[in-house]
Image (cartoon, rainbow, N blue to C red; front, side, top):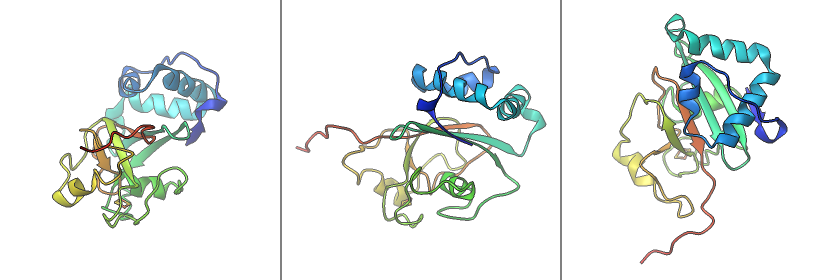
Length: 183
Ligand code: FES
């Protein structure tokens, strides 16, 4: 489910604690516009709240919420570990789920289609644990090739970062307006 956050009126997020905890790394205006979106989709909201009220009842489900800072969109996926996409990139990668749900390059880039030869699929993992929390050397070496997006300790390549059991909050970062020149 995708939403253009600018299209929704801000609202207060009266959600189960697990969901409010997951979202708290986002700016308040993003959270309140997302709450407005959920209010406009009552069936989806109920499904999401049902998960976060009793996650133990949905052992195969991992929610994946992705905020795109570039175009102010938010995608919410209820990924199913019994339906693991094999590509692009690593099986069960964040990128593979994004593509499996039909979201294309306009939402999350993947210039090399998961071949570890670009960094266009970079994301920030704000909350939640990955199945492979430490990037292997080949991924680590690619993280700093985009000078407009210097990596942080939360940066991963979405074609390599694999979903685990805990809900994930991820951000697609906008380029920094001013890039500090290297000494
Ligand atoms: S798509 Fe190129 S490194 Fe992930």
